[in-house]
Length: 464
Image (cartoon, rainbow, N blue to C red; front, side, top):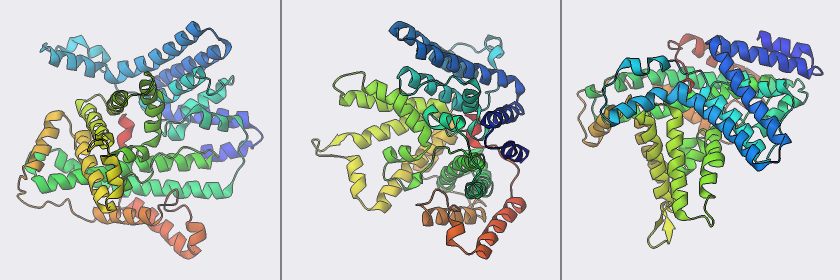
């Protein structure tokens, strides 16, 4: 609130002062978690800023490639050291049956910097786009630092591209009351999704996944379904809060979710789920792989899909469950696109023709299975859960998982379905609903948030 009033109090003509305030606020926000990792954020920013400057000045192919790969090695190196080092080492020990000794890599047992995977991909995309000459580099260090560290989306996205976000720091932002009110409504909706839906579903999900041996097939399926809604409401709720907060300061962020559970295929779902991440991997991983061979072959498309989804899974965390999660989704997408019946059609085309209820059921079953892989602590636990489900292990008793928490979920589903053409359900209330009813809705949501909030739970995607 202090930053908001100070920001607009500075005046719209003082863009540099506004940007400086945003940078300080972003660094204070990030440093409040662990100030030491501020230096890592600054270093990553400076590496890609300098890389962009050099790429702009040089036409020598060898030098341009050297600068590009220096940036890539720096960014991926930071990810490997802080996020994947222990995972790779422990996997190596297990593969070759080497006895694990803590002295081997205790030095690297550090916490993962908040938002590392998000801002690393954001800075890396900038250098790649400058190398490809899709954008011109900025010569304004302040604006670039703001682009990398903009606090609404710093820790969990959306992963913004320089051609969308950076120009917004380069021009004047004027105060707009309607945009401010819309931003507040979107923040309110995001809080509802996170606190009243995701966190409450999370209590039930944790109860089951912490002791899968104590539950039968029915309750395990129910918990897996609840988790799919929990992770959606948790992450899309954060996205709504981030986009809404950015609107308060006159910025526009990318849409990251588009009602993914209304998809007719897993291929379509990944175009609606974490859209900015999917687009990032499509542009910087899948497309280069597929285009590496001319003409483009079906086998290269398959390799491209599998490798891309493998890396998307690995991006989520240093655990084999995430790797298998990615591979599973990759295999499903390949099967959907594979020619059937002597190349007369594909499963993907068939899913577009069958009744929508059947395609929705197919998508949700597939994604629920992959959700089990995503949520399980390890592969053994995921296998145990799937085994108990598919062998139809009986439930001793229906637990208390079914409760008032489902009413919040039901309300969310009705609201999002009824307003699916809007950016978010509260967006157009001001022009569609009389003022007394509208404010009654606002107050009801606020009261529910204050009265029935569960103990504070971190956003799931903060860990990535």
